[in-house]
Length: 209
Image (tube, rainbow, N blue to C red; front, side, top):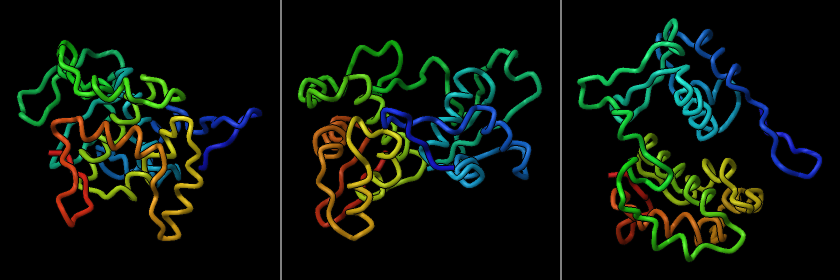
């Protein structure tokens, strides 16, 4: 289910929250992964994660991290029942939910504080933080990944005003991508986050510690 362009060339969402909820009726088992939504609706993994996050934020779903994977489930009346904090160490405390800056609510530290002033004038702070957070979440859920995979899987959903088509064409052709999306925003943002490790000498994978 590819994204469509509006009259002005902007991307128009074609997947609704209701489409995502219907996946829970078709996937075997009580829980759903972002990969299930991606496969069922024909969207990228990052789009699937973003849609599931939206449903979680509005209390339509609950979730839990298990072995580096985030599983989601829908319970009867979940939208009306108060969410409780589980005692399991892997359960997420709503009070510690991450903001796009990578810092928990209430935490005055801002690891992106030195990065934001260096952003290109065409990129807003809000969009940059959200894009960096999307890559951070991608590495947390998918595991270590090289720049090419990050650009391929995340950039279409967080273009920051840049055209993903040129980047994806270069990656598919086996060429090196050095565009501004990565070089001026994502790479500096990842390097500023304390729990993100850059590739070791001779390696290519970025990772979430």
